Each structure stands twice: as C-alpha cells, then as structure tokens.
Image 1: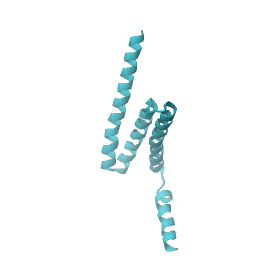
Image 2 (image 1 turned 90 degrees about the vertical axis):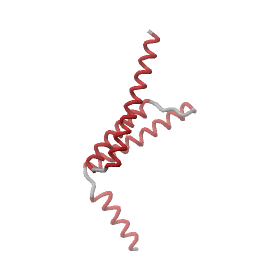
Image 3 (image 1 turned 90 degrees about the horizontal axis):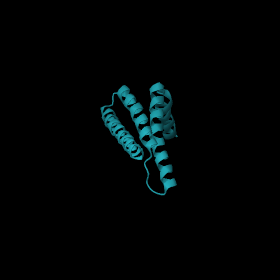
Length: 109
C-alpha cells in the first residue's frame, strides 16, 4: 500500500501542486506539437501516401515558439537550444513553401 500512496503523492506533487500558468503554457505548446502529427497523419491517410501539409509547419512554429518561452522561463539550456534551432527550421520551411507558391503563381499569370 505504501507504493500506491507514494505514487499518489508524487502524481499530486507533479501535476497538481506545482500547476501554474507556466505549466498551462507548456501543455498548450505540447498540444500544438501533438496537432502537427495529427494533421500530418490525416493528410497522409487521405492521400494514401506520406504528406507534410503546410499546417504541420504552422503548428510546429506555434508549438516551438511557446515551448521556447517555457524553456526560457524554466532556464533549461538543452530545451532552449533545441527549440531555438527548431524555430529556424520551421520558418525556413514556411519560407520555401511561400517562394514555391509565388513561383507557381507567376508561371500561371
């Protein structure tokens, strides 16, 4: 019984006692990251092939930016470096997509 009690105490300490606005921000950010995979999966299922829709990159950018803010608040250098680098990749992919669309539009005009 002590193990169950200890687990209950640990779960309370981790998920309830320290809950604040920053924890909420972290969960929202994680939600963005989860949604990018859901969007990618659904698009791939519809196409019957692997597809990375533009929404994947927007969810990546939103989740990465929020997680970077969260990581800075938590002062976690590994998390800060990882999310910081990820933001450049997400922005670069959105930039490439925008350029491709601009090029395609100019060819049809």
